Image 1 (tube, one colour):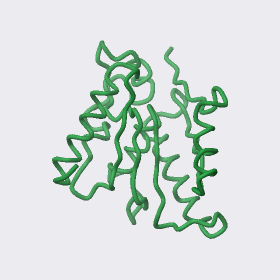
Image 2 (cartoon, one colour; image 1 turned 90 degrees about the vertical axis):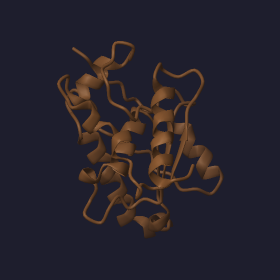
Image 3 (cartoon, rainbow, N blue to C red; image 1 turned 30 degrees about the horizontal axis):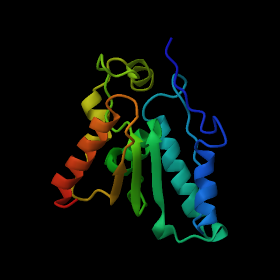
Length: 179
């Protein structure tokens, strides 16, 4: 069966170092984990992101942060989950996402099981092979009220990541009216 990788600390140089960098520059960071497929299926990872945002807001005073200046950042599959949280109103708490902005780094912001997608089986493991991929793709939930978003992708990423990120940048521009 398919499995989904999600070790956010494969090496000291991957993921865990991001918070060290931010801390050295006076920025508070919280490294958020989320449940993985096949045990947790869509939208559970996005719900985990929402729970983390709620925790940060509840603990803002103790953490010494302004709850109105919370940003989410996600890479790869993490980009899918934070983008779903930021854009899909069905997954927001009643008061909205409660974030000031979003950073997507080589994010898998479109769900698909296309033959050229090397992660198609992992996508199916999380969303389901018969999922309405258009409905669960974060890029399809961008609207004129979407949070400010920074989108970047690397040259040597998994195939299609550049296409997904370019599509997100395009849709944000079309909905918000500026890049």
